[in-house]
Amino acid sequence: MTTSILLQVGVKVFLRNEEGKYLLLKRSPVRYPGIKNGWDIPGGRILPGTSLVENIKREVFEETQLPVLDEPRLIGAQDIIRLPEKHIVRLTFCATTSGTPALDVEHLEYKWMSLGDMKNHKELDEFTREILENDFSKIM
Image 1: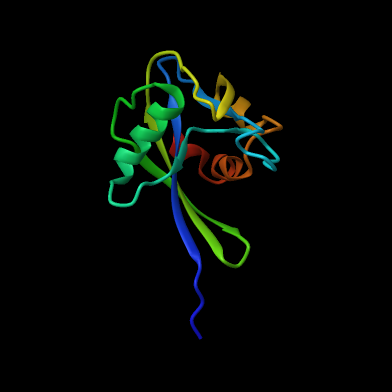
Image 2 (image 1 turned 90 degrees about the vertical axis):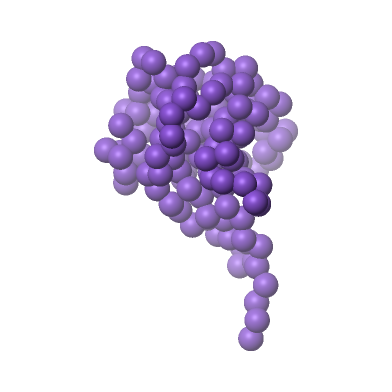
């Protein structure tokens, strides 16, 4: 029996600034209807045929106009299964940046936060929270 599913790969990044704080973005409810917890780290789906690092840099720049200053380091992989026919693999990285974000239409606001404050943020994306709870020491 052959079953066809939609498989997507996404990249996310804990982006640290010079002060040691990490960037959180608030998703637009217009752009992301139905999202329960709207605060998340930068990132998105990869473009097939391009490297993971290229995709991280592209997504960060599209969403924030910020540069990724070093080689992103992989810290986690998660399965996100949306219905039996859709599967997303989310790869989470850690990297550094500098500057002030200029947000795109996908996001309403941003915050720079410590990892501890981020972990206690009530509206944090569930998959970002999972990485914080399981792989906290890898992020630093």
